[in-house]
Image 1 (spheres, rainbow, N blue to C red):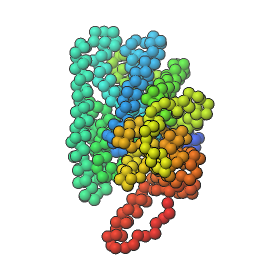
Image 2: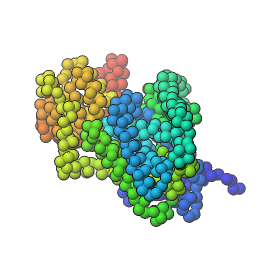
Image 3: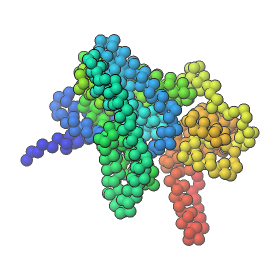
Image 4: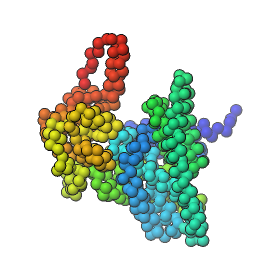
Amino acid sequence: MHHAVPLITTIAAAFGFALLFGFIAAKLKLPSLVGYLLAGVIIGPYSPGFTADVEIASQLAEIGVMLLMFGVGLHFSLDDLWDVRKVALPGALLQIAVATAMGAGLALWWGWGPGGAIIFGLSLSVASTVVLLKALEARGVLDTTNGRIAVGWLIVEDIAMVLVLVLLPPLSNALSGAEGAPTHDILWTLEVTVAKIAAFVALMLVIGRRIFPWVLWQVTRTGSVELFTLCVIAAAVSLAYGAAELFGVSFALGAFFAGMVIRESEFSHRAAEETLPLRDAFAVLFFVSVGMLFDPTILTKQPGAVAMVVLIIVIGKSLAAAALVLAFRYPVNTALTVSASLAQIGEFSFILAGLGVSLGLLSRDGQSLVLAGALISITLNSLLFDALRPVQAWLRRRSPLARRFERSDDPLAELPMSTDEKYLSKQVVLVGYGRVGRRIAAAMSAAGVPFVVVDENRELVEQCRKAGIPAVTGDAAEMAVLIQAHISKASMLVIATPDTLNVRQMIANAVRINPQIETVLRTHNEAEAALLRQEKAGMVFLGEQELANSMLDHVLKRFGRDEPHREAH
């Protein structure tokens, strides 16, 4: 008996082709997501043969966006957002304005109307949070300062796009040249939208922070693993849907704040682990759904237009973002990370383009150009991230301008002349002032141990100085930054940042300046810990091992037993 099962057919085809083409991409040393995108093109309506249900695939992809953003919220606190506000908020808004101007200018040059040009420009201005998160997670830099700035930047973009989506319908007549809605009606719509977003955020942070951790605790007490997983997924999807229906915010933004709320629970790490397989599976469906929307004939019909769109997304936006980050006096590596993060477009671009078509402002060809730009830029994005380190090294060797930015006259890049002598000799240099670094700093302060903080986040450095803690801003992998922290006379280097990518460079530069320096560092990866110990990088602390040791100490003391022999760090 044959049944109409479009949901099962779509899921089976999407996962099957994604597995096949993802495997081929991995064998060719390409990012797996390239295979996922190609799988979407193959089963999409613009390719011959089998065609999956585009509408169902899009809805499944939305679930992937919800779960992924929920996972980010589980690791991203309100404090993290607040710490990067001074660069993420103005930077994102200015970058949207610049990218929109570039896209709209190109569309006007092609002879499009002003309404279509603005929507086209806005579609090119906003990056995909899903693509960014996959890139940051794959490289282990999501929890670093650069990762937080990039995520905070995109959260601001998402909020801005929510406002744009609400305002476009009442403005559509004016943008098309017809008589539009009265100004007071538009202002009223804007006020209502902002009020709804504010009400949602307040509700989640004030009430949600108390209710949902309590609910999670009650479910955990039942001892049922299935109920715990169900509770977490229900919170992610239901809160995202409720936020969209009641407050008019996007699914992604609602899920993000749901994750931030559940982060207040002691079970947040378990929640992240339980949802990881589902997040990965539905994230694959997101990329497949993007490929399904793509019409390959646009590449032969308008190759020049496609090339210019890709240039704006990959080059124009990146240069604008880099200039803005450098203008806020952040180091070159932060500028490059944010640039690569924004060098693609995704889910909001599709929504904007679709709304533009439905309002009669954007042509089908315009929508196809947006989708072509998304597909190509997403494919190139992993390659851009892989190129960051060699590009950064090349700039430092060849570009006097880049070296001048690294040695900027930023007052936060060097210790004040009035710094007490005890912080300049035999002190501890503490790299990273995040959750772990703050605890180490507090303990050293209580014990009277002098130390200097090094962190890339300017806001954190400003907070340290206001609290009377000597601190400098910059990338600790750079020799010039370590010199400003007076590493030459320091007794110890403590690396509290989770960024394991640059830790070897930090140690190498520190030892080059001060061969007698003692190094202490952290990691959450057993293989990485073993490798660092083999390289004699210093005293390596593995997070899970130290937690187990502390719990074991408590148990043995309770039973009056001696401490066991510990593994050497």
